[in-house]
Length: 109
Figure (cartoon, rainbow, N blue to C red):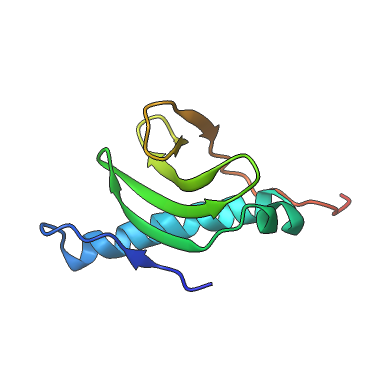
């Protein structure tokens, strides 16, 4: 899947774009490694891009899953230290707490 498309905003500097890209990639990696591969595949992600949404760095995923088809916005709310997940950009928000400690699945000790 091609990644790192960018929704254009005219006032962004190169540093702003790199920060948005870094936040989106971190969100994708944390999301990808928090579930199993079959779950990720079931979402049917066809596009992955990053932008600023409601003044927050945001990963946008175009999905074609069983329950939802369309855009999913995963925004980093740095003040609350959570990801805010919106479907099709509506105002219903699901919050995911960011874990700072590494999570190791399947390792003993």
